[in-house]
Length: 145
Length: 493
Image 1 (spheres, rainbow over the protein chains, first blue to last red):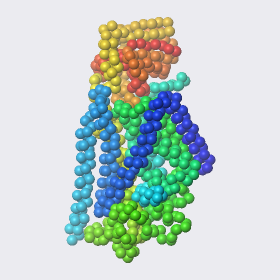
Image 2 (tube, rainbow over the protein chains, first blue to last red; image 1 turned 45 degrees about the vertical axis):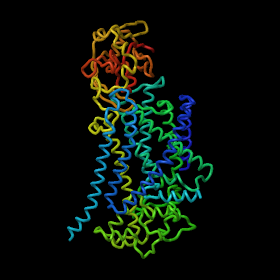
Image 3 (cartoon, rainbow over the protein chains, first blue to last red; image 1 turned 90 degrees about the horizontal axis):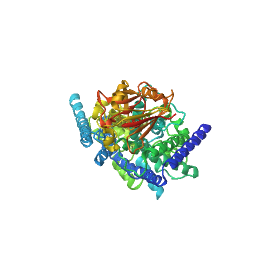
Image 4 (tube, chains in turn purple, orange; image 1 turned 30 degrees about the horizontal axis):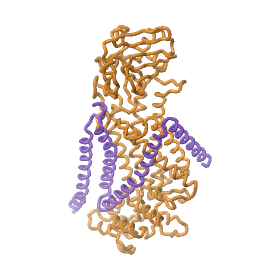
């Protein structure tokens, strides 16, 4: 274990160093500063903005979840995650298209309308699940007398 | 003060999903995805910038279509996996004390490098498929250099965490018979919640596994109680907690109430003993089993979300590079069969600045051998005899499409200038600028019977945007090397 760890750490550091070498030999210094701001920005964006937001949403889901049946909450949660990731991937695509296509075969679709449609379908799924989950206990009660 | 804030943050983040086992499971998937992207990326890099001794396979002709399609698809799959992994290890971000020593500081810095390069690599890679470059650095060079930083950080991270990874590698070592996460203080996990830490701390450890005081003091504690519906004053063990009360009013009974709370996305901080006891009495389960069930359902809910997001985002975009996913191509950056000659275009004739030169009546192709130089008009090229080939256009940006090409075999043209077998070839385009104006081709491609100077595409004359009057098409190479609007072919070695 100890030997394996040492080998992995040494190899890892060497590969990082090689990456840094490739960077300084192929990218001009002022551009490397530009990259540095993006790297720093990525950490700040994730640690200071995205993480607290996710914790907040998680706590809200946890509070909502108290009154929801297990299967319903699992479905709702999966749909929320899917909807968020799709938005994360497609919103930049919409921005890219607004910024200008190089030719009509690049980004050929109306991504805004498509995203709205897909998110709408996902919203319908959430509503359907909530309705079914709210009704089902009533039906159980009726059938058992 | 700072320590209090960090502890509060950790309490708020505590969840059955944020444990070392989840981190290992997601880390494995993410590690595989990173390695796949790295291997296919390095292959693509050397295809474009080969070392002098390198030769590449020309069969199967769809090899690059496959490797680059996998590169982009795995890269897109990394987005939800990376978010899930970062979400899982979030408590480590606010660990107390923040730094335990010089080595620990180095480790945290290496994690920062890892996370930063992963986020930037995936973000810029995704935007590159949209052909949008809103950053102050060159994409190709940085993508290449960051790939090594990223893979090095991955190897380093595995080395640092190896003990923890092997401790929680197998499911049966990670969860007890009830399905509860096994806290192992010797493994050195940084994801333990304050209440878990209190439990394993020998100084404060009590025989009872679930301390009643699992909520922090102050505002955080109040918020968490509100979230879990627990009275502000810790309930006496005999008094049923609110959820159990609520459950009794519902036909599903107490059992469904415990299942309900169990499923919540981040339910974790100890459910009060009273509620657990109440629920478990009805379902004839021990508190341990109830806890285990609660944790298990929460974990399944989490992985259901990660799976849905990964499958969803891949399925709705992979249609640009896979026939299989073509019917679901909702968000792909390209659509197959859309474009002139039934094929998408990357660089138009206008963008390349060849509108006049490529349509000039006196266009001719110059073929330069060691001793012989010949020029061919389009009609003279046709007279040499044409061949047909089914070859894909496979873009580095991930989209690809099979097409039918008709033109003169490269080896016939080289024969016409008496080039020696095994010759390297340099092709020059009419383009006035651009990184791919000049393209070198190794003998494995130049001699391949399917490598064509193409004149027709999908049954019609080559469109101006597809490289009229003549372009290169070779098996297994990136689209940027399938040079369009060619004017000269030289034998260089």
